[in-house]
Length: 386
Ligand SMILES: *Cc1c(COP(=O)(O)O)cnc(C)c1O
Image (cartoon, rainbow, N blue to C red; front, side, top):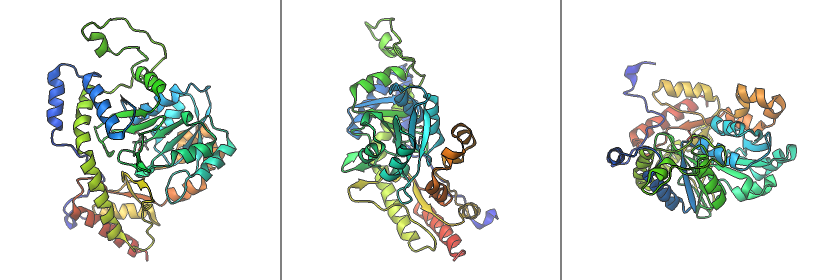
């Protein structure tokens, strides 16, 4: 690779920040209260309004959100929990840290998520006590259909909505009427804070439980104890985690949330542009098209290509950074050791499709010229292979 042949590398992701983020942080610092407090409460209200959810509980990350919700189900230790193998390792760790046992579900090759058929097949192998479903790339899964296929009640289904902000099914935003939907505000996600997460729930009891469990299980957080008239006294009724969101994060989040609709609009434009630029490239499978009644959040633009690893290297040499979502859990050493070869060998479509997946740069700040370079480099790599 010669550096002189191209100006710079197109990064896989650039985090967008709303205009007033620095001012929002300054206000929190000036207020004298920087950890969980009034900004966190206001962010929860704002995000609940954005989703149309009854309750939002802000936490440290999506990973801790998943663990908190799974712990709040009070299942016997070692209970089986269905999860896609094609998911982020943190979501599998959350099941294990909650003392539960992952059971792998295969995917449908078009949507890249488990279908009712693959969920039913996994549930026939091992009867699940709960299930984690995931909105891969921003595709809103049909939670009700998957819940029925698993033979579960909706109060046993936790949604990994890390890719969910901006997605809707039948006009209902992901998380708007969920038993438990877990969001991520990690730096690369559609609603980036840097780090952070949230649980959206329609269930009053779950909201109360995870609200206490995010801060050690204490019945009152320190902001409320220090308010005028607040008492020093608190109880611990459930052993919780240290998984609270700070007011600094919440202040950033409130500013970011005002820009999110515009960022989502821009993602949609970029996706339409990729579709045009890439149409007809030999061997290329474009991402799942929008289905009737489905609003895709386009967190990722995931294509499928032959000879994927070599193409990634060629794109990098041409100054285009890409990524892969995800290396399946069943291919990771730790989960192979814990789950065993038979369990990890139970997802053949995942094994096949995972070797072809390629995520192209997609973010609101992606310049059209850079997007042209991404598409041209990919088309060239594919044409060279006929
Ligand atoms: C990013 C991600 C997570 C973890 O989010 P954090 O906020 O970093 O904990 C979980 N699941 C999926 C699918 C993700 O992409």
